[in-house]
Length: 149
Image (tube, rainbow, N blue to C red; front, side, top):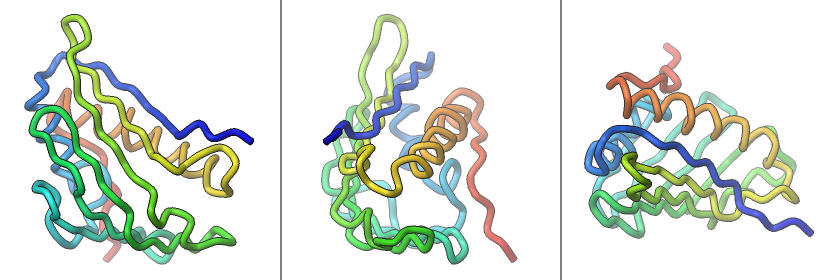
C-alpha cells in the first residue's frame, strides 16, 4: 500500500511574507468561485468548480509567513465513486528559507496514490501550485479558474 501524500515544492525569489499573502489570496490562484474568508485561524470558505468539485475548507493552523493548514470539512467530487474522498484531508502550505530562495512546500495529506482521485487531483494541484500560485507569487498574476456566467 502506497501512503505517500502528494507534495509539491516551489522555490521563488520573493519573501516568505509575499508567499504567505499569495497563498491566502485564494481567488487569485485557485478559483474565483469562492465564498468565505481565507486568511485567519478558523476562517472557513467554500470553492465550487461548476458541478464537478465542491469543497469546504477550515483554516486550522495559521503561522504568518511560515505555515497555513486547511482542513477539508466537506467535499463533493462528482467524477469519483466516493464523492466525499477529500473529507477530513488537509492542505498544508509550509513556507521556509532555502538558500537565497523562499520555498513553498504544498502537501495534500490524505491524497495518496491508492485513492481514486490521486491521478486527476495531483495533476490539478500541479497546475494550481506550480503554475497558477507560483505565477501569482512571482509576477503578481495567477491563473485561477474563472467563474462561468
